[in-house]
Image (cartoon, rainbow, N blue to C red):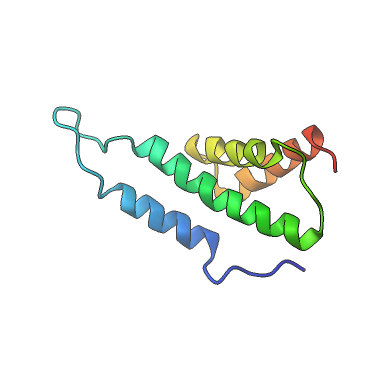
Length: 101
């Protein structure tokens, strides 16, 4: 059984989204500066932490590149509009096919 993080991931991502609205506005563009790359980095950081915890709890050692592949996938999918649940499920499948352990 996986240990629950004290803060639901959805709440963390929502907080990250809220913080992105507070980024400075680029003059003349009317949108936040580097919001997409910043959000992707936040999603990837949370994903990497969850990935490391899950691997440690399972007692498995992931192959080199597996964490970056999986979390890059999640960040890309969420950045493209997927829900957290869909991104997690789709990327878990893709990662398992690429890195069978």
